[in-house]
Image (cartoon, rainbow, N blue to C red; front, side, top):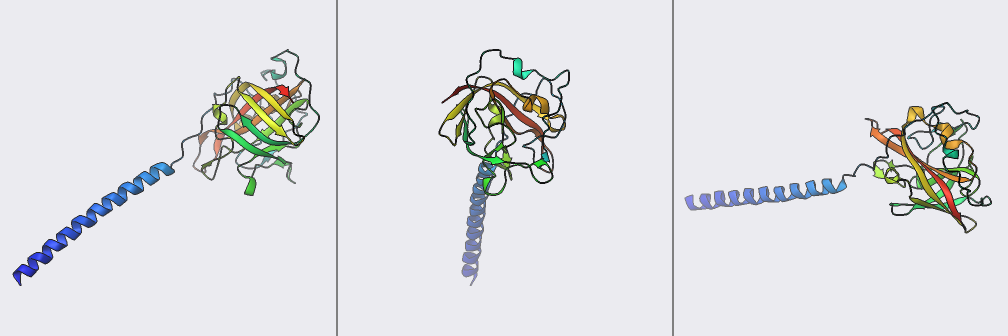
Length: 243
């Protein structure tokens, strides 16, 4: 009888040891899974040297007030339309964009048109197209004279989205926009900046330009408790080829 009790105690200790070992292994597996599930922070663009404020930005976490083309520039607004006096390539006829990609950056996504909401705000991509880029239909089509505006999320519900890498874009990078007519417009980046959402540089983004240009917009900067970003990342590019 005594021997049986000893065997039971020994068996119980072995079971506890085995169970503890299994729990340790399970805990390690869960930690590894959690580490793999964590998403890295998006690259951050440099802070803009100057910006003018006239309206909230498109591409923010919530719908925003649409930009006004009648806004006049302030004294410190960067004169982006005259930074390069070289003759721009001939503008292309109107044709809506279908795809945008950036050489040497992990940016490649479908593009669809997005218009103002009934309240005059410019919505951001959502639903089935949440991870696509959106061309603002109130701007020229990419390749036409003037600044075409394409927005996209940096993240959506905590997951990387189409413009997650936009903050890593630098001057000299090439952006290609495919169009419905089968042609592609290639742009060269000449400025990248990060501006607070409360002082979005509306004039610099939407002012008329002598040739075809492109603006790409997403969120950036610090993230508050509600998951909203404090800034906008804005890429300015000028068309160098259209074929």
